[in-house]
Image (cartoon, rainbow over all chains, first blue to last red; front, top):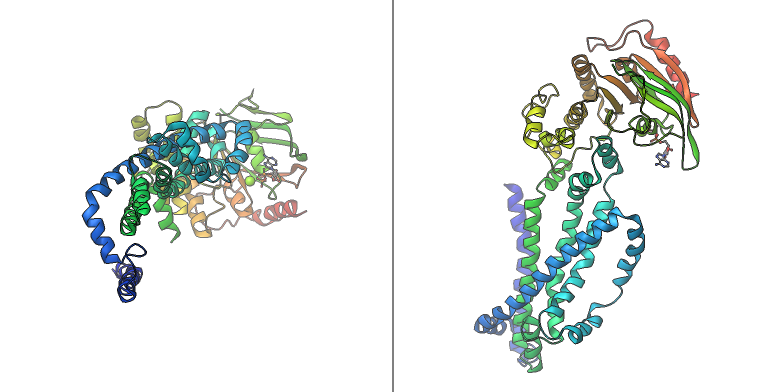
Length: 259
Length: 246
Ligand SMILES: Nc1ncnc2c1ncn2[C@@H]1O[C@H](COP(=O)(O)OP(=O)(O)O)[C@@H](O)[C@H]1O
Ligand SMILES: [Mg+2]
């Protein structure tokens, strides 16, 4: 009861801060009579968002599809690669440094290539999302698999478990908490990946909507799109966090014990 | 039935001669204790007996048959409970049965029959994260028992428990041993624990490790939980302590 009250009070602080910020912003814009095409006030942005909601949501749908497709493919790829690298030492030795090094290549610099190769459809966007999501997922999964206590493996070998048994019953479940922390990071990056892909040229999507609004100095529309992009990222993160709770409820039990 | 004989075991680990020459005989249905300084290779010896690791030289035989390097013949339990956090107690302890090919449902039923004996009655649906340290160790021991090899290798099973829980576990373990009559090899670094539980104690030296002392314990496994007052207790304890600290 008391804890609940405390958490409500704690939640009120950032909320209050945001309200304060919005009010200040609105008054500043009005007082200084800032041009709409430079910085619109929050009230105007809200009105624009409401007026254009159907159109924005239609673009958001495209972006969301690209995100989910890329995200799902990144998960599948990560599993295949992590399994192979965990089972075959040679593969791990060969690929691990490359995996780390690949992260020094800025995605935004290679994304135009995908446009050249795959055109203006959803394909290049999905590839960018895969590239953005793959690294945190694969690395967290690999880390989780590698961190499994050797003694578990010895115990299961002493019970005549096969390699597949050990992977399925021991390694995978014990790696899941780490995997999910990578998944949450990837979920919040995935929308950004899709939007970057769309910036470079697209037929549909929030990134494309933003580019068009920006070119015609409709900054209120840019802000409206930013709001939706943020909401999408947060929703995906929340979805993964929810799935995590459902898939590994036991992970929170260990936290209780440590309290 | 199974008498475990370890003969002339030598093992070099990472270029260091760890086990020089180990001879141990664990009598049928007896508890044979192994005491030794930490890092002397006690767990390594168990890994060799369990067939997880091959010795450079020497043999392990069970019931007169040489089984060096064969795994799956002994039940192994360690200081860490090594329960899977994602499975409840019942699913955890029935793992050895499932690995042997028993259908999950039947394995669960079989495991459930033993929950009472192992002090886990009513806790079958609990997750390891919800249990106390003592309960987790008992669950680990039930899993060891359900592998049903008749030979139990217990590697410091109670070392992580507090003194009071440990004492309770001792009296409880003696009852379980009376009931199932396994042949036990018991690693510990607690001399009083060894004197209380073991019929025979081997004291190992520092690396390169050899057996330094082998003593029979005449008064072990008492059917009470009082302090042992046998006049031989003091001298035996001193002899073991001396062997350990030289
Ligand atoms: N796989 C291994 N490779 C190299 N050295 C090891 C390995 N396992 C254990 N050791 C070393 O061998 C020694 C004996 O280990 P261990 O059998 O665990 O000792 P104990 O159980 O008696 O404390 C230790 O010094 C340990 O660091
Ligand atoms: Mg050890």
